[in-house]
Image (cartoon, rainbow, N blue to C red; front, top):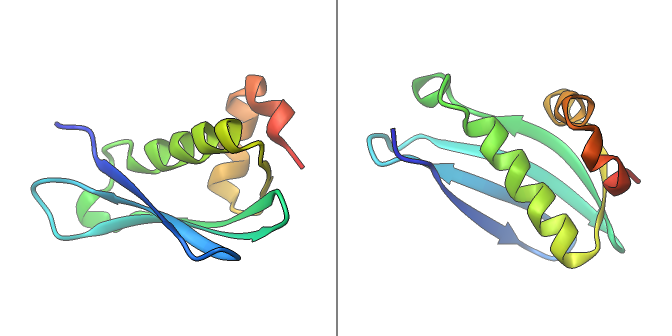
Length: 96
């Protein structure tokens, strides 16, 4: 399977990461809201038809990469994002 194409949709105070795969029109999403330099990761949603491909993990990895680059901190409100932080203690410096 090819890696999903991840796109950042940034509306300033809110936005989302979107994941698309070549063989489906379904879109995986990780939504967030921003206050200053703190992003609250609200929901990771991957439709069943594209589930089981590691798409949610790729969405979180995109969030982490951008947070490092932009100097953001993250509040993992989403249970999936919170679990990803527990699995990756090296991301602890990004916790708000």
